[in-house]
Image (cartoon, rainbow, N blue to C red; front, side, top):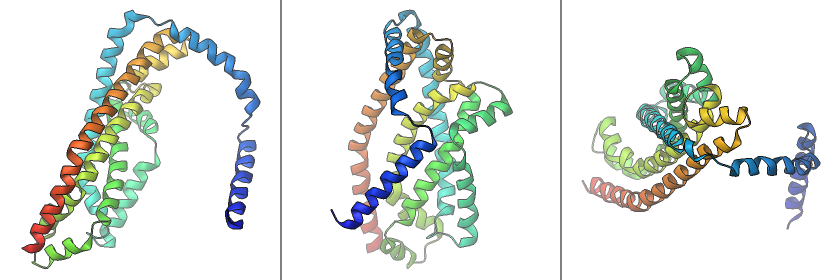
Length: 266
């Protein structure tokens, strides 16, 4: 290792020590708290199977919330990402759009959920609205960054034949970014399901509402059933996502190359 690397590592360690002191991070307290965790784990093992139907229905409700929020959020995010891309618009267009998207991303989904609970009341609708807002900010940013990395050659080739911006988007931008969008969509759906489990903390519906309430009253055995359902669901969705990526994203990338070559020849 070079002296510069040693200095950098030393600075990082020093900052870590200072930050740990400022946030009262005490490893001794962590070790002393392990027996409490063991007690909770023992209580969670004593699950109550009669709550399985309720847990499955709550998980189904959570999946619906995540699905609606993800799809609607992406539909809104796509045109915003086009407007926010610097290689497609002037500064007067992309600058305010980026500022708007940055404002959306400033608030975490649980804060959006709290705001919508105040606005429309507790329940699943507030959770769906929170997921939509977070998805818009997240997907729009990822997409306009992808659009800005598109090779300028196919864009110049298509632009040289006098096509409109709409045609440029249809023939180059969308095909070039399609595989990225599919991957982002799958990740966002997976992430939103996890987030929906947390939104119940502020009364925004979903399976998290049950988990939070059971834990609040120290009913860990009941909470364990719902947490186990979440775990199994997330693992299944992750497995399905991998299969979809393997089957379609590679084909989409191949299709982009074919489309680009065709447009260039024309």
